[in-house]
Amino acid sequence: MTIKINIMAQKELAGKMIEVNEEGYMIRPEEWTKEIAVAIAKEEDLELTEKHFAVLDFIRNKVKSGEALTIRSVSKSGVVDTKEFYQLFPGAPLKKATKIAGVSKPTSCI
Image (cartoon, rainbow, N blue to C red; front, side):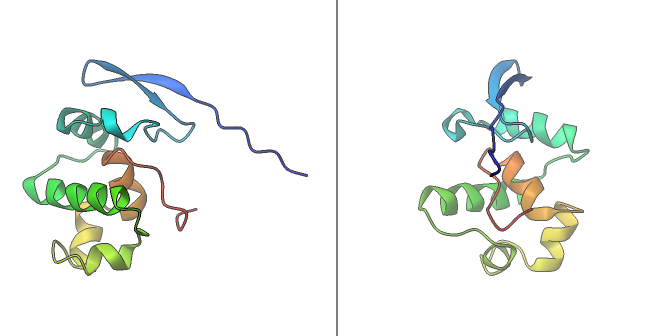
């Protein structure tokens, strides 16, 4: 039997103490601000543009509505296509984008 323990920590982001899990994802999405997004993006070596924020807004709205979040759903959002999503959030776009958006990592991400 495997027991998974969620370890939470506090991290200072944009001058605020924010609770995050062991992977650095925010525990309380309602505490998210654009300033916090900029701070998380900086840790990921990204500088956010208006296009990044459009994607982050889409992600936050999709998660808030309870819909499943996938790379495909982002690429069909009308905000970005798949290629542009990978360019904006290189490496692991959905993991990076959700982290910066202040929402939980999608279950589809390992």
